[in-house]
Image (cartoon, rainbow, N blue to C red; front, top):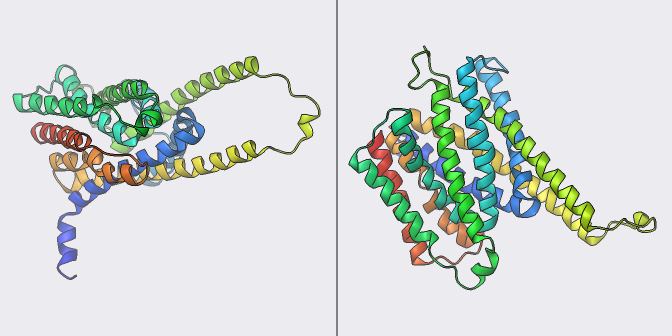
Length: 337
């Protein structure tokens, strides 16, 4: 034990990076469970508002300010980043979680680093060497290897929206990549008018604030659409039925809502709070390449959870595809840092 503690202290960054990957796994599982109970839009809305409150409190405690002071260009870049990456991108992500499950959605999320690297070439003037391009190709190959596999047996019944979920998972990765590039511009990278880069916590807070506005508008539109559809499909309730006790179905729905709120709270804590904090510790305590590599292991870590919790039957192709996709991200991270 005496030798173990010093060893752990020298590997703080690596341990934090692995913890970050596990946090992303837990977040995906809990949000998927919540989305199946109350819908992906409600999950995204509640998660965003909870995260915003937590980030505001942390920012106030650390920096002494509720609202950060930023120049107009940074605000515009971060606003676009929050709406595209967190509001729209995460809505695609949460819908994919419900449609195709956390394992497949997590694998598709590995598209974000290659797309971000491709966008960074012309926008941030970060050219890619042939090894980085090879890493991108390997990642896409691993994802394609998993996606084109045809589900068997009960999996076909469980994932009725497989095509939609796959498309949304891809769009989520693209939106996250665009959001990342815009966030870097908002921080001040490649901009000559910026003296000091914006702190990552401040960046996260501003992005989440504008994401909250975006998801509120989206949720409001979905609510109005559903309400209009229900009014067209249902008949007026008679005065006698209004005084009946709540049905078993209504009681079950109340239970599902309570369970969903618990899942959303758990996912929010492990995501924007613990996960982000561990990722910052990882980047601070070890090299960016090692941190990015270990944090990209979520598609591998989620495999046993998919079998245990979501009762998926994994084929050898699913396992190999996840490993190949992660290997591509590892290669890209090691070359680009």
